[in-house]
Structure formats: structure tokens, C-alpha cells
Length: 265
Ligand code: 13P
Image 1 (cartoon, helix red, strand yellow):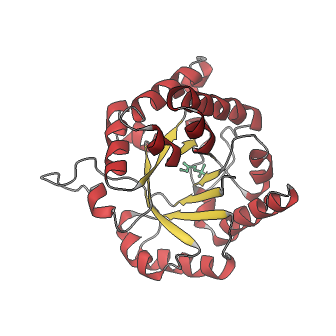
Image 2 (cartoon, rainbow, N blue to C red; image 1 turned 45 degrees about the horizontal axis):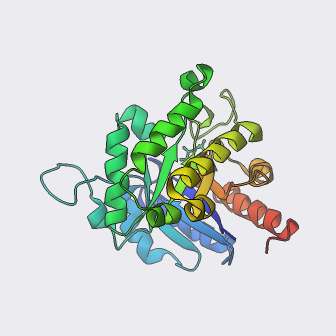
Image 3 (cartoon, rainbow, N blue to C red; image 1 turned 90 degrees about the horizontal axis):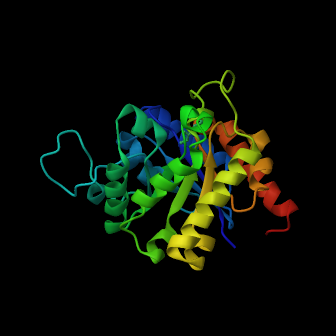
């Protein structure tokens, strides 16, 4: 059985003392779960102090981005090599990075390869924009993103990776969940089925079964059960709701209840 994986992507929020306070609150509310892995992806600046503060039985750390070269004259960048003893995961190819920072398919591919080379597990984000969805191109977009991003990986490396389906049109602005579209379980089911089928086709049955596939986009406690009911969904990449210790711990609590009710634990 794959564990549930829940990742809080704090995006560009919280300075070092605010981040430390949030972690303190999360420690109070979140237990050690045998079958749920909880990962925090704070801003780069706070990774180091949080790594000292974190109870590693409860949380793992992820970076939100890194640069694909191991070292050199790349002003302002932080490499996967520099992160290798600090984080378990790095988020790669988030739609905000693709759109706002012009990360193209080849850049995402190089970052995924750099993560694996440095023993860091990639959380590869894939998903279509609203325009691509309206044009009926969603599957083609997923295909192209998966094909390039994973092209330098072996089946064993893909098996250990995580893939987050995050349709760009369903991502919140971080503070409210009103005024933009919310993905329905049917939308997510067809994308997740497609992702697993692609991995199985190209990398074989073991990778297709074991790769973790997450959903991300306006996830709040109320929708957790509906998405976990979708076959092949293993958890969530949470944005705005991960900045509030009530909602983030409620997402974890709802996932645990879902597991218990399904008799999965
Ligand atoms: P929201 O949960 O705020 O929609 O963000 C999703 C996301 O982009 C996580 O990476």
C-alpha cells in the first residue's frame, strides 16, 4: 500500500520567525502517523532553521525550487547539491514557475535529473492551463510534460518520485477560494488515470503502481475524502490552506479518518 503523502507548499509566505511559529503550532496539533507522510515546503531562507526545529518523525522538508547546475557562476541561485542534506524533496515544474519564471519543458527535465543525481526526490508538478483545457488539449499537455520531465530517469527512479496533478485553473490565489474554478473529482480522476497509464506504458507496471500521484488546487479539509476516493490519488499538494495550522492539520486529520473508514489502516 502507498502511504498518503501531504505536502504544504507555503509559496512566498512567512519570514523566519513566522515560519518557526507555524511549525511550533503544527507540532502541537499533528501526531506521528504511520501511514501518512507530512512534508513542509517553506521558503528557501527558512529551510535551514526549520530543519533544526522540526521533529523528523512528524515532518519532512521540501524545497520549492532549485537550480539544475550543481555549482558555478549563477548569481542568486541555490543548487540541488546545496540542498541534498537538508531536504527530502524538491517541488519541480510548479505552474507558477512555468508561467511566471518561464521554465520550459527542458528546464523542468534538467531539474528533475539534477534532483535525482543529488539523491533528492522530485515532486514533479504537471497540469494544464484554463486555455489548454478549453481547447481540449489537457491530455496532450500532460503527455508532453511527463515525457520530457522524466526522459532522463530510469524506471526505478520514476517509481520513487511523486507527481502532482495541479490544473493551473484550479489553484487559489492563496487567501480565498472564491471566484475561480474548483476541480471536480471527475476532472481529477481522468487526469490521474492518464498519468498512471503513461507511467505504466513507458516505465512498466511496478513504476505505474508505486509512483505517488497527488492532487493540488484549492484543497481544503472538506474536499479531502472526495479526492482520496479517486483510485490512484495518494494525497495532496496544498497551497493556501497549509499556511493556517487549523486547516492544514484538519486536512491531515480528514485524511486519517478517510484511511480508517476505508479500513486501509
Ligand atoms: P492552493 O491550494 O492555494 O490552490 O495552491 C495549490 C498549489 O499551487 C500547491 O502547490
